[in-house]
Length: 494
Ligand SMILES: NC(=O)c1ccc[n+]([C@@H]2O[C@H](COP(=O)([O-])OP(=O)(O)OC[C@H]3O[C@@H](n4cnc5c(N)ncnc54)[C@H](OP(=O)(O)O)[C@@H]3O)[C@@H](O)[C@H]2O)c1
Image (cartoon, rainbow, N blue to C red; front, side, top):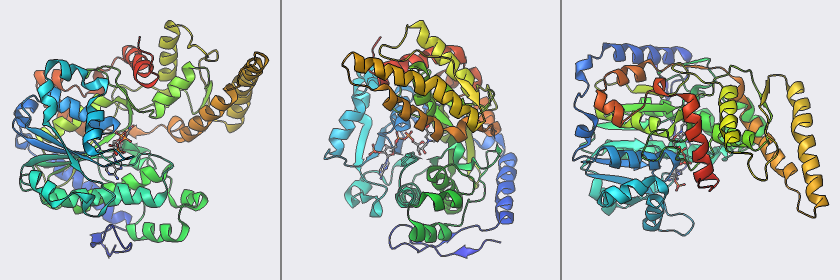
C-alpha cells in the first residue's frame, strides 16, 4: 500500500529513504489505525504515578527552549517537577552571542524571577547544548552528545521557524529536515521513554474537522522538493501548491507530522498540537508572554484603535490556549507515556471545550483596556465590526480606520510632529489580512484524547499542571492577558 519514494533529492538534509504515502486510501488506513490502537490501549498501561514523581531524577532534552513555548516549558518543569535532574537545552549561537550568554538571557526574563527568589539553585539544572537543527548532524559535537545521549528520558522537540514569511526552502530545511535530525538523535538515546513533537492544530487547517489523528501529507515529499527547485519562493505558484493550507509554515508542519508517524521507529511518540498560543494563565507568572502571536497582536491593535473591522463572522472560534496550558499538557502527556506503537496525538485547544470567538475575545480585551483608560497616544478604540464580505471590510476599513488615521496624522503635522498613524494603520491592516483565514474559518478541533488524558490526572496534578481549557473563565483570563501584554510586550509595568 505504501509507495516507497526515495527522498535523497537535496544534496543535504533528508538523505535516507522514507516512506511517503501518496494516496488518500493509504492515509485513511493510517488514520483509522491510529484511532483503533488508541482505543484498544488499556488505561492501566499508562504510567499512573504523579507527574512530578515521574520526572524525579530524570533528564530531559528540549529544542526551542529559547522560544515562547520553550521558556515556559523549562519554567514549568523546574517549578513543578522539583526533583527533575537536568534539562538539556539545544541552543544555537546567534548574532555573535555564545550559548552561555543566550542561556543567561533566557533565564534573565521575569518568568524565572520567582524561581530565582525561591529556588535559585534549580536554574543550574538547565544545561545548554550548542546546536542548530538546520545544520548537518545538528552541529552538536560528539563530546556534547556523550554528555546526554545515555541518560535522557524525554525529548520535547519544539524548535521551528514560525515566521509565515520564511522562504519555502528554509522552512523545509528547518522544520522538516530539522525534525528528521532530532528524531535520528533521539533514536540513539538509550533510555528514552518518550519523544514529544510540538506541532500545530493548523497543520491540518485545510480540513473542516481536525481530529487527533495524523492525516495524509498535503503533498508527497519528493514533489515538494521538485517544486522548490523549480519555483523557489514564487508566491503565486506556492499559493496554488499549498492545497488549501494557509501558508508554507502550516504546510511544513503537516509534512512533519507524516515524517514523525512514518519515521518514529521504536520510539514511543506523542504529538501535541496547540492552536493559537496566548499569554500564561496560571504559571508562576500569569500574563507572561514574549511573542506577538496572532490574537495577542490583533487584540492589542483593537485596544489602540488601529483595528476596527475584521474578516469573518461573529461566531468564528478564536482557538486561544494559554501557553502554560500547552506546556503542562506536553509535560503530563510525556509523564503518562505512550503505551502503544502508534503515535498519539493530543490537540491542545479550547475549540470544542469552552469556545470563545474572535469577536468576543476582542471585545473583552477592549473592555479590560478601557477600564485602564485610553492607551496614551492611541486612536480612540471601538468595538470591532465583523464581516465576511471583502467589499464591506474595505468600506469599513476606509471609513473607520483610514480616515481617522489620516486626520490624526494631519493634526500631528499641524502641531509640527512626525505623522505616524497611517503607518501604524497599514501595519494593522497587513496583520488583519494575514490572519483572515484564521478569523474567517470555523474549524471543529477535537480534543477527546486530550480530555481523556486529563481525566486520568489526580487532583494534585490538576492543580500543579492545569491544562484543561474547560476551566478557563475567559472574562477573567482576558484581564490577565491584557496586563501581560502591557507589562511584557509594551513594557508598561503597572
Ligand atoms: N506560538 C504559537 O502560537 C504556536 C501555535 C501552534 C504551534 N506552535 C509550535 O510551537 C513550537 C514553538 O513555537 P514558539 O511560539 O515558541 O516559537 P518561537 O518563539 O519563534 O521559538 C522558536 C524556537 O525554535 C528555535 N529555532 C528556530 N530555528 C532553529 C534552528 N535552526 N536551530 C535551533 N533552534 C531553532 C528558536 O531558537 P532561536 O532563539 O535561536 O531563534 C526558538 O527557540 C513550534 O514548533 C511551533 O510550530 C506555536
